[in-house]
Length: 187
Image (cartoon, rainbow, N blue to C red; front, side, top):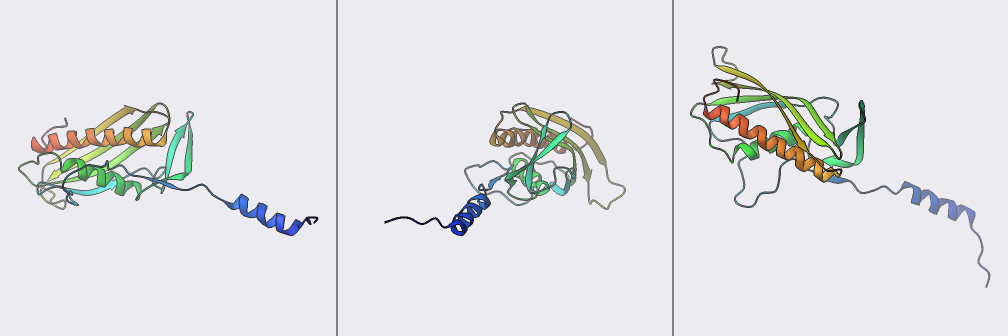
């Protein structure tokens, strides 16, 4: 029996094969911890008011730096939530592991740079403001600090995410120390 060649069927099969996409991988800046679940907000002494991230990296897909001035959007590597929410969740998680201060404080974080450079480092440059009392109280004490953290990283996306997790852990320690000290000076 002789097989017949069906060109339209072959074209459909080739088109479907070309439309196949790679699976999307989701990443989080909150590391997996065993034990009791953590609160959704830092304890009674500290409230995270807002976290802002640069618009260049504020997207679902992970953005890496390549060369001196190129940003690359990784189409199949995504954050589990918006980047600002990921940063906030990671900070809440880390700050819940640290003792709080005596006074109620609000924290606002503006990430200036959130660089992921494969095979080199993850960099976090954050300007943060800690204020005693309510955020609308004009007479409250306010501390404004700049923290720049850089962690070496491997080339894989997982390595970059873990390096940025380490940066956020260090930022949480710095913020926690300032909170316990009464937010009188930058650490």
